[in-house]
Length: 243
Figure 1 (cartoon, rainbow, N blue to C red):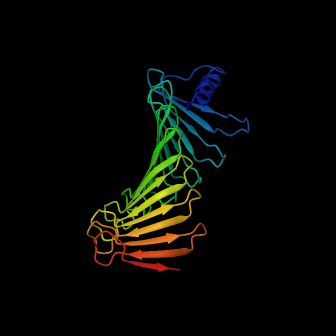
Figure 2 (figure 1 turned 180 degrees about the vertical axis):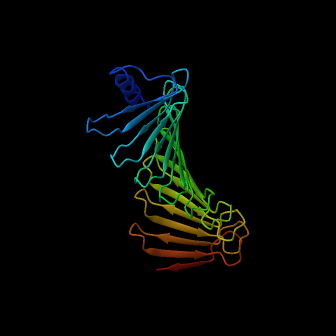
Figure 3 (figure 1 turned 120 degrees about the vertical axis):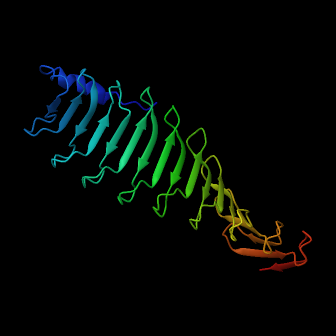
């Protein structure tokens, strides 16, 4: 289980080095003894911790803030990962200190485009992605109880509708992918994979009637070997093309 304990213990070690600050004031700490303050411990009027600010790289700018809001462990931690002065990663914690959610500005564009959700044991449960950074999530990934990718959904044309679905093995190898090519929220193309993850078969519903009428078969090197067609749409192939 993920906990933030070392940092909390360090706070009390720093405070114990001298007289405690007056309530409502800020305790400044030079943690590496280089003559420059690099931590600022903010306390409320009743002496409880509000937040701790850090300058981890010594450039004089805050690049990490642990927010306690008078709790014994942080409820949120903010990071400036590229040291440009803007926070770009935000981690949220449960009351017991376990990690609940991570939000990231992965491209340093000023917008959160990735959210990671964790269970109380610290394992990744799901990820939400905004690939075009328009403020709307367009990718959703779900993980199994071992923290491995199990399923994924995507809105590839960013119209607010899922048009791609993927299924994976317990080792994160793709087994199946479905596509909605005409925007009616119904899959009309289906891809199946070998245990190696290579393409095995593709099925098409070419007239969008909900029934497959074209099949493509691939060998283990992903070379097309055979095509079957159902020209009268009775559900049975009536043409077979061997490659």
